[in-house]
Length: 556
Image (cartoon, rainbow, N blue to C red; front, side, top):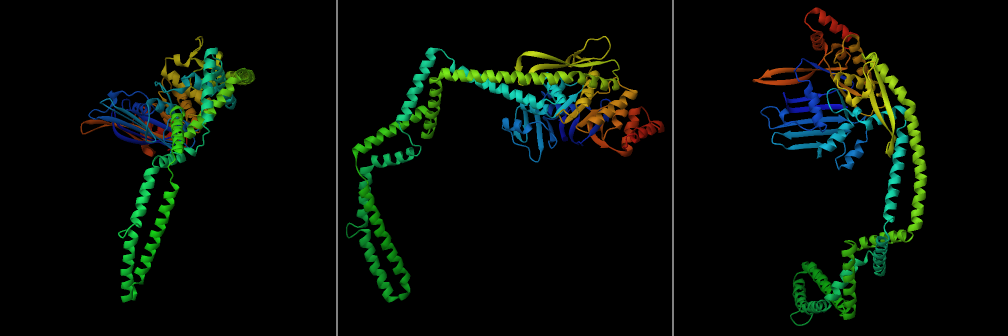
């Protein structure tokens, strides 16, 4: 559900934070107060193109932020966020932010990570459905209509299976395409692979050898200098009367003299003994090292050749020897596949035959499920439409077969509607009246409320050309939908607003010679007063009528 909407410097709104509640939220206010600003703000934070003329006069930029609680959302948003490298939700809270300035800059964020308008819109498509004179209406898209039909038919898992089968078939077709090439290209590829596999195999590579080889090559290349340097170090230790060993002997005499005069210097005698021992160990290690280092031109030549081979292989096949080994293994696998091309093609063709049979069977099952419920869906929606004032309307889900299957099967669906007797049904997208559109959407949502995954429904102008008893029905249907979804309804009808769980009032005022729109929740007497205003007057009668409307739904 949408929990928070913050709007800053949008049209008449200076800085407004709207806290929304679950269930049915009615939004009312006088004409021109700014109720449409909520719709505009949501459109912006859900990826609609920005109209910079909406930035409040005197401000440099406009900001819209929304917080959505995902605890009851069934949409695969976690995978969508991960796919686009966005931060995951913290404590089931999805944070959306949109900023655009008068200078032309445009920024959008999801969970604090910058993103594109397309990604923002893709996320929004799973979160909010707006019904009325607005474009953010998922039910106008044939793909979403088909998804709703499948939900109504209970065939969603079958559709997922079908999509997986189709994806497997595409992979096999790609593998076939890699094998089916002209003979010259085939022979050239074979020759190249054979050379690469032979070159890597003959190198007899070990993933640990690279580091050891470089170390040995460095020692062999500098053998003469290493021996000379070690010998010089040995000479410094013990070569003449001025060596470290000789001077350390003199030092020992002086320390022993100190000890004879002062027995408290025993620690110095001990330290001197340790230094002597360390120098003897150092002398021994230097001798042994100088003995190990060997000037071997033949071995150096071998090492040079091996190092050059490694460098050549890494230039061709990978930055590290491990990468070269993996490349060789992959090349060997491809070579084996190409050398047994005919057998591999036969195997792939056999898999395709098996998959095509499964695809046809799975597609037929889905089509049968859909065909079984389209009439039932149409009749259910028509019953809802009659309650909403369309006494002679017609609604149908027109199912047709496509030549090329998609991930959803062999069918396409088009929701069609005819509001009056004698009129041919038309696609929902072709209906001109926004009031008709909103009520059709309300009817469909009532039927499909338990199946539709979108958690937030917004109705604007749903009460256009509606009055009397139909207005009561409109309110009750939205209240029924709100048991499964959060509903926001902008309405002019008190009958529609009275049944809401929460009532938000939009007002317009003047402060410091500037017009400001504010939105606040109303309850108790304030709600009664607003409903009385909507009923058309002041005094006791409208107030009494308003109280009756509220008492009829147990609100107040």
